[in-house]
Length: 131
Image 1: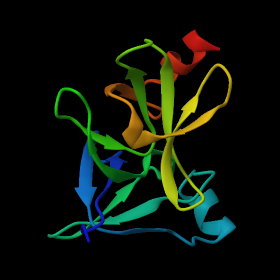
Image 2: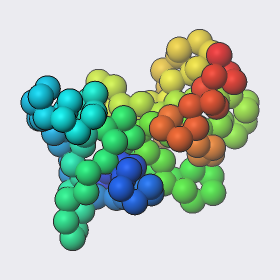
Image 3: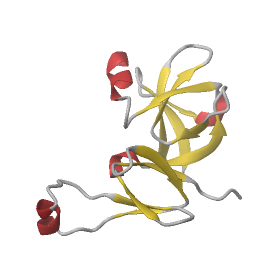
Image 4: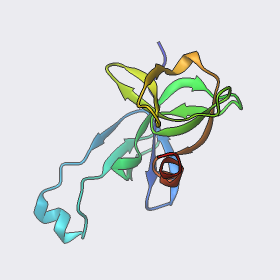
């Protein structure tokens, strides 16, 4: 059994950080207003110390690598190596899948050669281009 691995985007350091567990903060509405924030954060647990990340950036490692040896995470945008289709990696019903952005068709992620071309946090424009 593999050890879970997660990533999140730290707004403090403006970079991706990696860890082994996370949770959503539970700030009161008053506290969120006092820090001029409209939603909760995520706290990512790393081997050294917890790091606050944007909750929308959180994703789990699928355990798979793309055709270039890049780790594939939930929330990545991938291109199918054969049909050039653009897909979003999702976690649903206990497994990782690619969601066809054209037909919303679910396929298991390990059945196809995929190339990571971005992620939904930094590269939303890739999704808009395919809509």
